[in-house]
Length: 403
Image (cartoon, rainbow, N blue to C red; front, side):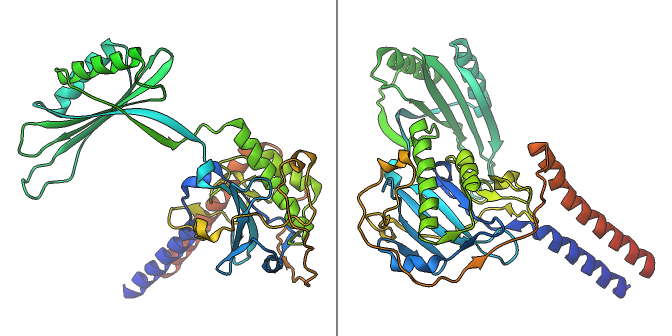
């Protein structure tokens, strides 16, 4: 019996190991939305970062990364990193991300009201729903849930959150109502937050908010608003074109100074065509897959794909690590469109240091499979299915042989 138990433990260990192969701790970076990142894992591509040690205005970050300001626009930062996709092989990765001051911003006008109502959350939500729907507000969602047990009172507080919106003079006004039932007291704490992009001084906006507050709370109160700035997820076209131009220029510059070798014009065109803000971070960065495509990691066909589970970034740096000016371009001007944007550079010449190449590669199918993403989904299901069948066969064989 003990022998059978040992076999069972081994089998469980095998299954757990196989599952964990596709799970990694990776970076959840809020700047991914505004950044673009490429891993140069194409077979035959080689790199050597040691040449950067002889160039001014480039800072090393530990022994795995370098950081500097972009040549075309010094408000963007270039991060070069040694990274892994699978196995122990290291590839060169380039990431273009914005200095915090150039992240697209949006100005909001916000009204916050805190009050209490002598009623249950359920009754308040029901009454508010009727009021707001009558006055043409649209409910997006409403969640009421029990919170954790309060050890002091032995009661389970109840919390709720409901969101609504309404277009007033073509402007969207958002309303979030948060509710919290106080244990042992017949009161519900109510927080109202109105948020819009138009100044609330506008009579129509101000009057609507005032009437809504009065209807919900059952009384008139004085209120004011604050102006806040938040990162915008509506990225303007000019920002997209800027970051694409910067990425293309920096790749070409790295090629011109012999840091990066093995890419051809078709590679550069393919990367530029797909590049856009948001293709950065573990699951979204651009990689070269087994079907010969430069494509987002989440859609790529690779020998092994790891799933992001959260955790820390592999490379940390502060703005203090970043030089104030870009490195010299050594006469490289890039495309005609980028020429006008290139900042003045020094006349230094590149180092003649002998470089040691690090070459990466794996077998690639010669024919690109047709069918796009649908084909990828089939292939991505196939690998775990084969693993599952293999494990099932091993379990069946051992059980039949020894038990």
